[in-house]
Length: 152
Length: 252
Image 1 (spheres, rainbow over the protein chains, first blue to last red):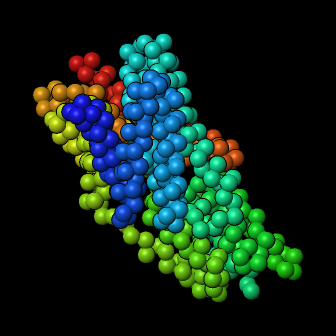
Image 2 (cartoon, chains in turn purple, yellow):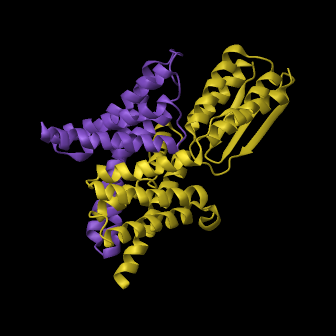
Image 3 (spheres, rainbow over the protein chains, first blue to last red):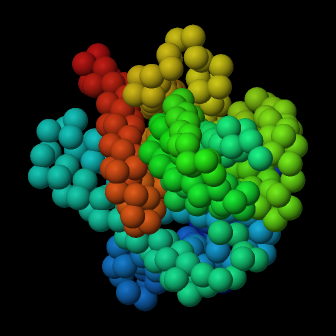
């Protein structure tokens, strides 16, 4: 139980709280901030679990982005507001900040090979995120063209 | 109906949507729907810093308005309010004057968080991201301080960071990395990497990155490339800025 707590629940909690902070920066008001935070926690949970099962971080990022996309679309339709804010804030823990930082470190240290490798890996990760999140949006936009009750 | 006023209505709403950081397809679609619900056939074209709306009057006279969109951040509350208003106007189609009045009123109506709450947002983000990246409680405290400094630079530091996105980011990330280095050197923090990355997450252009990819997927390749360039610029600025203290420390 202690292992589950430190390996899974705590990181998700930190991701959730960090994204609540980010929600404030982007002027998200009221309950919306909490929705963003929960989305971020959910996304990171999916990432950790699929990472354990599959062991491939780019694929896990893709799946996590899909989960966040689906969650944000549902929330946007429930609250009848644009999906943009929820989606983008909830994706932030997955955005490879560490990747950019490490790439820069290698660059400064003159390790060109490591720099290029981590840079390309960062790009792949970011692309997986965007495609995953966008896939859900595209599917919904294709499937529900006549339903006007949702958050477009 | 006065088509000049109608055109102004569409352009003003679109301009506010753009300034809130909405995606291009949302802006184009919203303005087009708004104008078509008033019976005008509109052509709308938007790229990140320009919005062009054009309609034909029933007499066949073409009317066009272009708005230049200044550099802007993301304001989700404004976006939601514009979206709500747009739907309402499409549904109820009140007088054009009345609708324009409603659009103008948006500026004063949108709730803004006070600088204190915004600073709290930066502090929270930095502190919890440092825990997220494997820091301990002391690192969390350090990152909170760094986040406070970066937030203060972003919110109140216009006079020395300038309005240029690139240099602002360089300065902010140099401040973040320098403070993190100093605090760890002073023995307060333990995990330099967690503190630095946690603080830099405030500056990482995650929003712009996902936005860029969304634009490209939605078919607005030009806007997507425009934003991708912005992302690369900001990421380079972060890398440069956070390298400054490292290089200095190595030189000393």
